[in-house]
Image 1 (cartoon, one colour):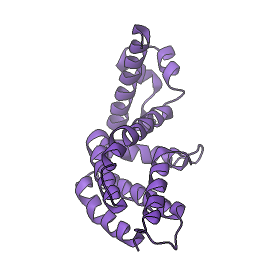
Image 2 (image 1 turned 45 degrees about the horizontal axis):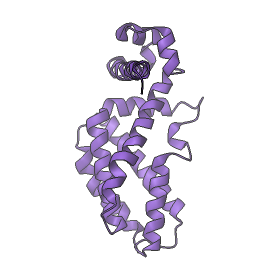
Image 3 (image 1 turned 90 degrees about the horizontal axis):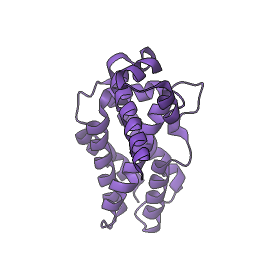
Image 4 (image 1 turned 120 degrees about the vertical axis):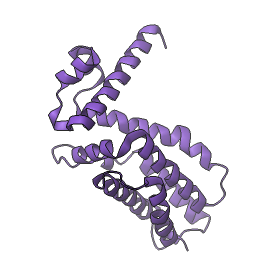
Length: 197
């Protein structure tokens, strides 16, 4: 990466971080692109060079999260034998990441924006890494004869993804007043047991 590319990446990160802070402070709909530009001491050209709209800020954050799944989380599952153990570790690390790196207010804002029916929700994009990871783990669970066979891997992964969205939504509307990392243990223990033979 040359110096110009490094500078562009720094600008993009600065805009992303500042925009998320502003959304937290005042709410997504109350923040303008001009305010983001002013707070970051950048230009409109710089903003639109990296993001098509304010909504793209969230898309970028989702890409970061998906990157975390592949780069940080999946390699830690390799040494585990059972899919049950893999799922438990995945959910534990995922929820810890959400709690520490995003926080309840950013999650709340993301859910508010994803409920906008005028555009497709990022949550529903079929090829998302999270969907692939859940599908692959459920398929592995069936191949190893750990998981029940009356549901397809797709049905099981859909259940898991809906539970993920459910706990994140609940944690957000409760203003983060409980430990997401601790609470997920009870919830996913029940769900994973329900998928097992």
